[in-house]
Image 1 (cartoon, rainbow, N blue to C red):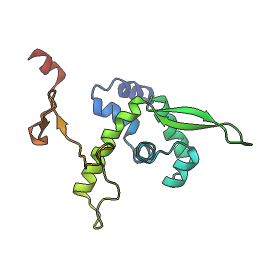
Image 2 (tube, helix red, strand yellow; image 1 turned 180 degrees about the vertical axis):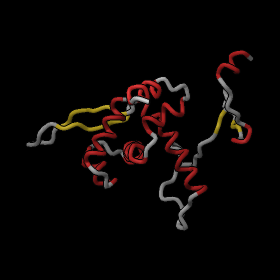
Image 3 (cartoon, one colour; image 1 turned 45 degrees about the vertical axis):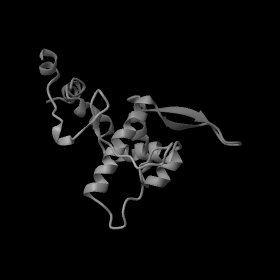
Image 4 (spheres, rainbow, N blue to C red; image 1 turned 90 degrees about the vertical axis):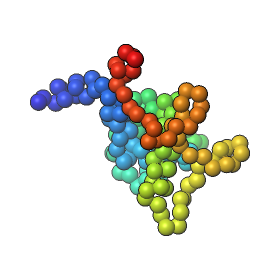
Length: 158
């Protein structure tokens, strides 16, 4: 199968998870998003130093996130230096905080450190611990084993 055909088929992927994974599904993209969402990193040098990522890989991943509308570039200039770009989450990128929190929660539950979590999730206003959960359209929590995934076509016919 030709590369162009593979690319076309990927673009036409109907599964939302597969389409999302194309953009954020590799280790470096998730770690870049973690730094932006949880640690307020915005500058190339900050991402590079904190992650130990090779510059060419960082350029590639930031480009993918910008092209996908997950991050946006904003120019900045320090006194006496050239203009550079900083990288900020867009509203679509901000939505990924929930995904990052869910991954963190899974890691805390299933791959815990003996010393305990290194980052805690809490509400900004009350400081109470928070966790990621399924919630129905009335705001009631739903147990994960009581959630089912159905075809949108099947749901539309019901």
